[in-house]
Image (tube, rainbow, N blue to C red; front, side, top):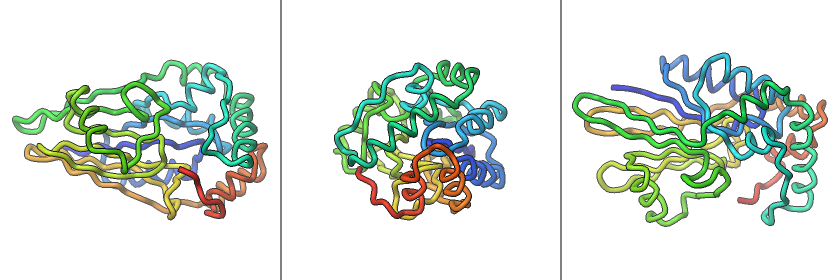
Length: 248
């Protein structure tokens, strides 16, 4: 049996990340992977990057990482309210001004995809890691998508399981021949009603893969206080306190 942990979308929320990493360690899982979006919306962007670097955790380039690394202009999203659009511009500008140059360089060098192969007994399991999709790190794929969307991704990547993040909403979908599409949710900015820090534990056995979504409480009040004391809009503190309903 092999176990690996996959997490995504930390978004500068160091207290949430530390709770997740502690839980992974408590379970004795040594193989850890991050699907990206280390920065924006909470004030510990540098500390999160440095934590990932110090632990040598393989990490993908999320859309927020790419924007900060290459100073890509912010484009308003039609799904956002005027309030969120305004807050988003300020929060991302805060990251662009405060993320250290060496950390921007780290983000710029992150891979786009990662394909894993694990052998258990006589079985080779192929696991495809993406931030959001095979072609893009900014495509929103929800549980409600047709099965064909996910089976097509599995076929193209020749994978038994594909893991994604980006939407901040976890789900598990199983298909024929023990193939899976899984969203591991968000560590630092969950859009689920419980707002808990979410990550994925994969258990690989010769006969099957078992995905488990783990959701953990973390000191939200600490994150909220530090957002309020930073140059990041209070909108994101209110969001974490579940005072704002997210638009998918």
